[in-house]
Image (cartoon, rainbow, N blue to C red):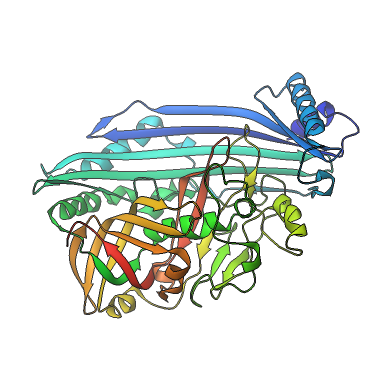
Length: 485
């Protein structure tokens, strides 16, 4: 680490207002066993540095995979040239930008490092899990997968900042496909887009119940293939955490990103129905809705001590008792917005997907706090409704307001009792009205730490890791639809 700081200090031009250098090394391994046959392992390793220069009111970035003194000097020169070219055209004077000078470190908790096992041992585990899903001839396809990543990042700044962080990420998944009754249905352990993903070592597999979960996934795939289609109508909806994860992500996370509210994403991923004058008083949801930015939630996928601009990360309420409190905006967006909304706060959530991308505002760990209702109490309160698990599809408009989501698994509730399984369940709503229909929030026994490795945003595109932890939540009067009349 001292060598990295010394390299940056040596390569940076003199006389700049501010500079930073963010060094990243990432290695990843993906393993899959499908129908008891091991597929070829995939391994990647990537190293590089992003330098940022602020000078004369402008800002410039340049990235390079050449982390030698020569490579860094070239990157700094390019960033300085871009800063000079942008100075006269920028909508923001970067001499007013925050200049981080923090020092510190962060390391993922890792009780069982992947490196302490052999490749053969990891494949043996996947073979056992895949074989356990073979519960009959109607299971026509099955797989078990494991994706592990180790990332090291050091950010140094001209003002003395030095932040060293390292992460370990584990993403397991089980998939079973059943064919019965002239239908084919897919069931997964946590979603086809890996909803169960956490920081840590192979102990993440224990928290997921990975070694024991194959038979359940296969059995539920068969139940879905034999089930009736989901009915259509207005009813109560009980969303389990692996679907709440997607609901939080799309209809709270993205619309509250401050750069999107400021218009940065309009020509790519859309805008937001949220406006700056809503913060501090707007009823985003019912009084039961409490949403936090939680970089310190144990094991969660997007936990960190400092964001990629060097701001120290601390827990903060985004929505409190239903009222919108603050946006998901990092220090630069907070500085930009002062002319429009003086005093507007934010959180340390400026992030980049790798060394060759500049940081932008991203949701990180965005969580709903548990309430005081048990799962049994929520089910008992439903006269007519449905329990929904595991996201399968999503669609949401450009302002992140109107949405419709599909789930892998549905189970009807009639007169307070769990009833038949149904397939192809979908529901739709409008963000504000939907969150205001929140009627019960599950207690700690229903709370799960979930997330996704696949949040896309930005030009050029950045696919980033995000965490969402939530209890089960009950919503009243939701429009549900499926293949049944």
